[in-house]
Image 1: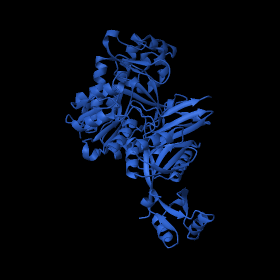
Image 2: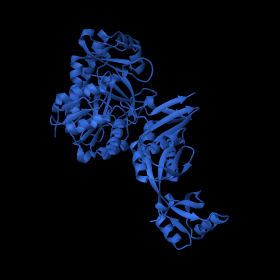
Image 3: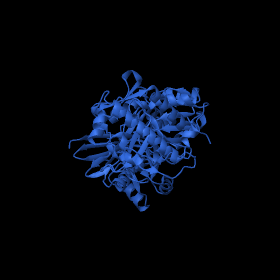
Image 4: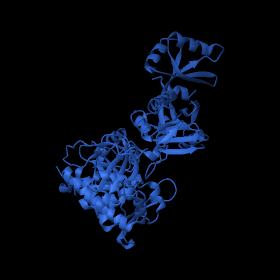
Amino acid sequence: MLYWDQKAETINRAELEALQLKRLQSTLRRVVRNVPFYQKKLAEGGVTPRHIQSLADARRLPFTTNADLRETYPAGLLAVPREDALRLHTSSGTTGKPKALFFSRKDVNNAAELIARCLVMTGVTRHDVLQNMMTYGLFTGALVMHYGAEKVGCLVIPAGPGNSEKQVLLMQDFRTTVIHVTPSYALYLADFLEKKGVDPRRDLALRKAFVGAEAHTEETRRKIEQALGVDVYNSYGLSEMNGPGVAFECEHKCGMHLWEDNYLLEIVDPKTGEPLPDGQTGEMVLTTLCREAMPLLRYRTRDITSIIPEPCACGRTHRRLSRITGRADDMLIVRGVNIYPQQIERVLMALPGVGRNYQIVLEGLDEMTVNVELAEAGFDGHVEHLTRLQAEVADRLRAEILTKPRVHLVPPGTLPVSEGKAKRVIDNRSL
Amino acid sequence: MSAVNLIAVFAENQLGQMARITRVLADAGVNIRWVTIATNDELGVIKFLVDKCDVAYRSLQGKGWTASLVEVLAIEVEDKPGGLHAVADCLARNKINVENSSGFVSNNRAVLLIEVQDIAQARQILAKQTLRLLSQEEILTL
């Protein structure tokens, strides 16, 4: 069994919790000293660092929200002198101002350390060639992974997303073994290889894919594994928490270990904000424990998941997250019904006649259309068969989401392909 | 023998789709002898009888269209009142369920194209009747 940082990864729970408390207290002292936003927020809640004597006391701390990050843009949450910050990332979100994320030298190194743990736990070594297909730039996805993979000693190919012709050439010429990719682009790439007559099992050296930046389903994982002939590991991160490497699957692929020596993990009821016990599904709340440049207290991630408290066979003591079932922000309300796009994806990816790309369009007064690509080999020239498949998709969707959408079956390769994060939902409702 | 291939193209039900497809066939030097369109509200399948099926298939695929070959039976119909009825009656008596059909007349010879579930079985049954099935070559030289 291989670890990058065995001591940190297998630390016993009591020591881990003592370390968390120590780091939480130190984080609190620093924000109270250096960040007026938190001084004010803590004062409003009548909390001082002295009140936090155990991890259970953390629930007395105020939440930090998405809106707080936008309101304090650009530098309102910076906890170090500007000249100690050496990297800026932003997270665009979908509306309004971006969120600015600062990293100190130590933060950049820490983020890379966590990535190194993630890579090594899936069996990556310095002999691997990692082709990084995430967007390089303001987005954290590519750069953070890049630094971590270099730390492990892989040969890193900073390919960025898109330009599939070039991606294939690089994979062939440099015998790429690992790709870091969004699920939507992985599926597109699989189609592209099929069209080009490249058989990944025969013509490429791919072994693993790290799939992240978009919530996706177990069905999608299987589809990618099958199409590319790789092991797919679910990767969780968010820019507010350094980007990728917050939580990652080990070789057992049963939940993502969240690095608890770096993040204090809570699951809360998304409506009341009350903490929920392990195993219950709710919104994940994270507090940074090691971050210098921009510590965040009890950040509401909006991601819906649960904690798997049982020990893992890999020996790591850091608790696991179950697959993210959706971002609270992604939830759609259509005709009064709450729907997560992942529910739709799960239905589609389990139907053999359906291809790898889809789109949800909301229009008018709550009309929902699901555009679905037909599977590459799914056309036999008969309109009746297409009609039947269309009806089957609609019926299965109704069983899952309790409302029957219009289903629009389209030829393979005709829906727009995203190169960064997939835009699956188009909301043009005039509500 | 005596099966006829049509080339079927999956097209979204939107303006100009037909023209985009026929442009590909024209550029490939494919001659269209006959065309039929089947649609539901959302989508359509356009089927062509062409002189060069393979060329048509390859060039459509090459341009990103989703295409497929469809095997049909081409039955010669007498070009007079009751001609089609005689064929339809024969199909009914032999319990051949027709999924799609279409017909045309060329040089005073009428042809009915039918799509059935089990083409081999239908061919066998029809061979015992007085109906005449046309081959790909025959139908292209009508």
